[in-house]
Length: 168
Image (cartoon, rainbow, N blue to C red; front, side):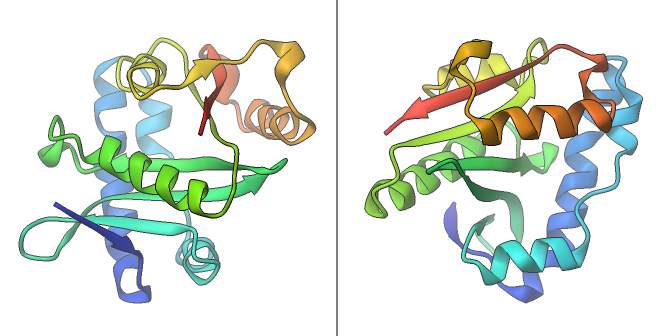
């Protein structure tokens, strides 16, 4: 498995990966998440141009996972990390996260952050295994609070959510 910076020609595949990665949510009673539209090509292109989009490629060079990140309050915030379910349980998500961690360390970034569903097995429990810890409300930075508020407006807080941080 190889991880590299995303290229413009990868972006349509990222949308397909996101759609496929959303389908398991249907099986746990969260069809709204499964039906959520992936980021637009324009949004993905913004991450790609900024150098904050990476892809994991299968042996033939086809993207099977991706990660996009955003600077938030001096840290790098994982906006999305998704792996095609056909490639699940092969440590691809972890490899993408570790790639981001290396990138962040090299840039002097102190931590990675993310927001996620608290009770979905491949969300918060998975990120704990990747070294993230849940932040309590007092530890939220202004940027993380803003992200949480935006998620509430989008209806994501219908299910328990948490903010997490991994120091580098």
